[in-house]
Image (cartoon, rainbow, N blue to C red; front, side, top):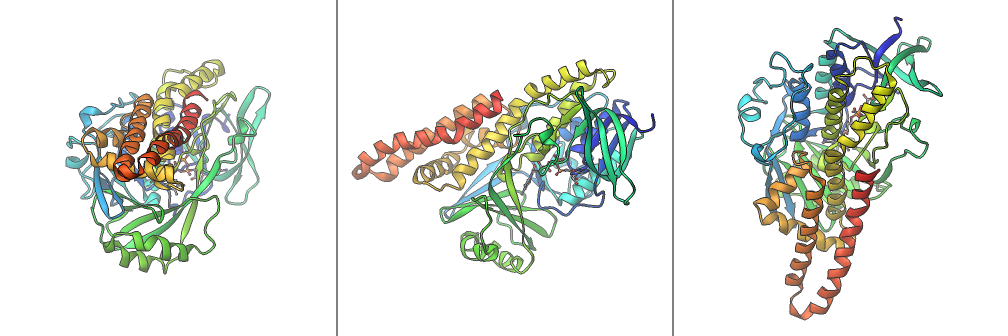
Length: 482
Ligand SMILES: Cc1cc2nc3c(=O)[nH]c(=O)nc-3n(C[C@H](O)[C@H](O)[C@H](O)COP(=O)(O)OP(=O)(O)OC[C@H]3O[C@@H](n4cnc5c(N)ncnc54)[C@H](O)[C@@H]3O)c2cc1C
């Protein structure tokens, strides 16, 4: 039985360590396999929304944001054609509560400790929700330290090459160890597949479980940048290029992610950045942006994948392997960690994961229970990207209307940022707010066009509202009803 585990976890990125820790704290024997345990150097997962932090707390893993020189984030600043609007995270009294998972929270592990960057005053005593940004690799190393400290966990470095599968479902994995040894077989009652964006195993559910890629993010790292509004994420919008994100990841480094709205990257990436993006950046950021162009540039595809029902007994796809959205709104870790927390909570009262009937029923519950948060974050990410990267006159009207809607302040800001931060997981409220933004955009268009263009404005009422429906409705249906 030494090669048999109650839970096998594939991948130790964001989600894998959370699942493995949760399972181990339930007293289960866990194997976690990662192909490379050294600190990753990636451009993904660098800004965590408040609801991601809530999930980490509920798992007793919040201290993973400590001692990595992380930056507290109080919200966003949106720049649009020379104007700026502030979008602070909502008041805690207005947001959803994520209760602690009994087996996971003990000894104050659901509270941050003061480390000079992350403080109790900012994260525990604050009346407002707060997010955090950091170097991805350092955060992952902390998550891995937590999982490695669990006594029920065995860690292994190697690449999972196959699932052990028969007509009854999945029974384990085959691993090619990193040290070049011969492949090893491990059996497990339940295999959690957390192998991320390029998952090799998501097709185990169905052959057509394949993400779509319609845009890319091109990344720069600025050094000693003059950040316009410190401790906020910056969204830079402009009619001349696709949106860009800016946020601090260390006390001296600032990440810039520039969207490129095409399945292919530009032929000359640096030329695109220099000629199209640099000129629309806030003046203060331009010198460090120019300097960063001398360094190698990284990029990533932006993938979208609706979650399928995990209906293969013994297999539980989770994290990016299961479900992806546009990274514009920085929601991936939040969805992944909330899924991890929900999975751990859902399985908490299952005495043995080898009882496939009970375990499968719980996984079906998970599929439906996760939809509210998942739908809000995923739909918003796609809808906002469509508006912010507007490539038609109707979308540009919606883009401008959206910015003006934010300028109204009050609930026109606190509710949308509640969706974005994952703290107001209400898909039907999101639908209502999106409808209001579309109607407000049409109204602003009337005002901008004036009396002389009244006939055009009347036609645009229909074309703009039709565009809004096309941007929103297919994703609402896919996310809620698939
Ligand atoms: C450009 C970009 C920017 C992003 N920015 C943000 C952001 O700011 N905030 C945010 O919340 N989200 C962001 N995301 C999304 C976020 O990074 C992901 O949602 C998150 O990393 C998913 O976690 P995961 O554990 O599912 O996958 P990963 O974190 O990718 O982990 C997968 C792990 O599995 C391992 N693995 C893969 N295959 C195997 C195998 N066969 N055998 C063994 N191990 C294997 C990998 O080495 C890796 O460690 C961004 C995404 C992109 C593309």
